[in-house]
Structures are given as C-alpha cells and as structure tokens.
Length: 292
Image 1 (tube, rainbow, N blue to C red):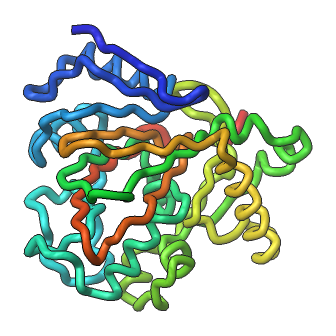
Image 2: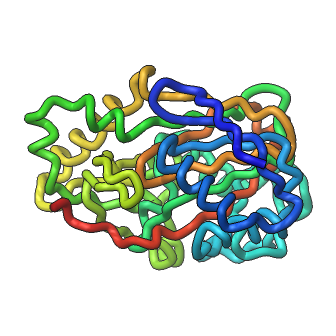
C-alpha cells in the first residue's frame, strides 16, 4: 500500500497513513518514510499498534539507536529495552512520580529543545510513542527551524553562520528549576559543541541548530552569547513557525528530525494524571559538518 501524506502546516509536519507496523517494514517503505521526513521534518502516524519491541525494531530500521542514560542515578528501569527513553511521569512500579528531583528534571521538557544536542554525537530522529494520554494537556509543540532560519535578516544570518554553541543538559534542567547537578550527574553528561547553523544532509537546506540546552556561544562573552541564543529561540518559535500536536490515542507515533526542528511538551496535571510516553532516538549518521 502506498503512503498517504496529509500536510498539517504550511511549511512542515504531515500525517502519514498506509503503514502496517505489524511486521518489519520493507526497505522501500522505510525509504518513503525517510523521504517524507526530509520533506516535512515531523511525521505523525495514528494508532500504529506498536509495542515496546516493535517500536525499537522499527527504529533500528532508521539507524543506530542511542541508549537511555542513567545520568549518575541508581534507578530501577521501567522498560526491558535500554533503547527506550522514559518521557512519561510514572515510576518503575507504574505509579505517578513522587520523587521531587525527578519531577523537576522532567519539567525541562517544557522548554524548547532539540533531543541529545548536549551529546557530541547528536541525534537525527526521535520516535515518540504514546501508551497513555492525560485527559487534558500534554500536547507536543514543534518549531520549524528551516523556516526560522530563512526568516532571519541577511545580516543576522551572516553574523551567526560560523558561530559554535555549547550545549549542556544541566543548563536547561536548571533553567526549569532543577537543583545544582551532582558530580556524578556532571560526569554522566558533560557539554558538547555544535555549529549554530547546519546544512541538513537530506534536504541540503540550512537550519538553525539551537535549544534550551545551549548555554553560551564559544568565543563570546557568556551573557552576550546567551542573549543571542535566547533571541534566536524567541524568533524561531513565533506562531507562524509552530505546530501544536494533539495526541489522540495510545499507539500514536510521532517522528521528528532534531536537526531541523525544536519541540517542547505542554503542561498537564502531572501530579494527578498519567502520561506514559516512550521514545527511541536515532543517531545522526552524518557528523556535523562546517558549512561550505
């Protein structure tokens, strides 16, 4: 069956039907999905029927998977697959999280960010699968970083083209209210550096590569660099560049390309309602390259 693609926004995001996730996908279908990702950056698949095992197996068809980090904390894993990141608000026993430190950590997801930009080997795709959805809130917003870059004045594009930002997981977490990270947490996730403007290897379009994880610009005064990053995030998340995704049913899957989008979680009553979301993360097979 051929894929059916329905655009959801003028510049990015599409809903795709016609994919049977019951069995491993044939290579031509995987290639069609990759082509759709290059064209739309965010692709939505409804009621997929994916399980933890088939979620991981499908993700592997897109590339090498990152393993969820322990971040220096001794926690009982909630999943049998180390490739699954826990993007929900439940503990290993399936109860609402009571650990105040962990809840504060999760609040960082409400900031505009790009998954794994704090790693030297950055991420390409994230695949987020819904298992339980709260009755209200808990949507996910996406920002088009191609359109955002293209909207910048030429002088600003020229100014930022060769800049490098340092990304640190704990910078964004502390912005959201997380306490000073422990030494073990610092050692588990040191900072990484990436160019502020990247050329996407698939589309060959220029894109901003920024996030709440970005703490400063290398070679510029810290306050000046952070002010520039903040300004760019504000410009990139104006309403015309943003799409708000409403999760509808368990089994809904969203794939986004971290190299040309930002995203954030929207609020819900996380101390009252359950939200069980599980994510796999595909490494970028192409190292970040200087612009030519």
